[in-house]
Image 1 (cartoon, rainbow, N blue to C red):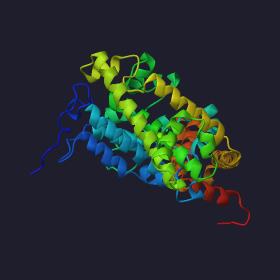
Image 2 (image 1 turned 135 degrees about the vertical axis):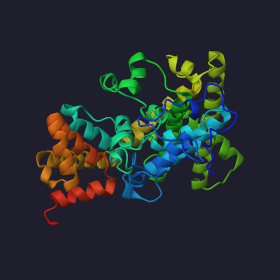
Image 3 (image 1 turned 180 degrees about the vertical axis):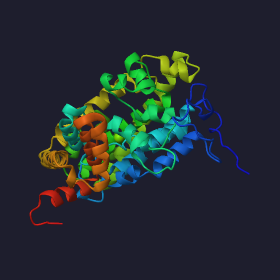
Image 4 (image 1 turned 135 degrees about the horizontal axis):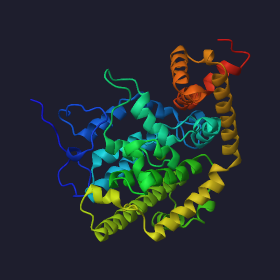
Length: 390
Ligand code: MG
């Protein structure tokens, strides 16, 4: 006999509950054996956009080495951090996990450089925002279910995926855009997934940056979040090997940030007196957050990474190349739909009929955004390398 599983026991009054969900756009019977948010998570894990995260990157290009994070391992790290904090704060772990695993689904190939390039290409056609694209993937682009396009996820998961949104786009989004216009907050699970993302990428960029030799321990010793833990590990374990040292420092940094996040958020939730998800949503500022001191330390680390890692000449060479590839692909496809795979030609033609050249451009952007790093490089070679005529 099928047993419908509700959420985990002991949720706080202000946590999201599947039973109180605002539901799916297309109503469906409740799942057997799982909660609604577990079903969301499972649909995300089985999506093709999720599998492609394995070959997409944030800072480094995928083929640079097998040791670096990809968007897939990053998303799993975000889910891990998010779930750990959710459990302590008695928030809905399944929902945090679903949001974390979906949050990067709309990312282009080649990380930030790819996203900036596509946004530039789309500037006359409504622009390109990766958060909006993640939502587009789960709402429209996945073609897996007989009865609907997209994954038909719950409102709360979709709310969490749409982390940022320009006011112009928010105005056109109906219910999901309202909070941006009213300057209100999403549920605590969405707030948490957002900060778990920040903890995960700052720390893994330190780890990957060191491994790639783009930044050094000496440089990082000027960053308080790092030096505090570095001193501690060096004092407790003199003579420890560098790889182990780095891992030990990074894991302690994550731990330090998670602890700060738990304590600060717990305090703020207590002081706010919120007792329901609706009260959380009605607030003008988030309740999940870091202390003032940790916010400052995080900012220091972010500024360091921006200056020393993201603008490193080796990263710049790669991102310039990515920029050229993305722009060349976009123009080639937009100018002549016949070089698109037939399925996309048809979609672009239909979309052009409905929305003019902006509609055609949107399908080209969807096609390019869905590519992995190596697929984009392959498409570039197939289109522009004179030595390749197939
Ligand atoms: Mg992320």
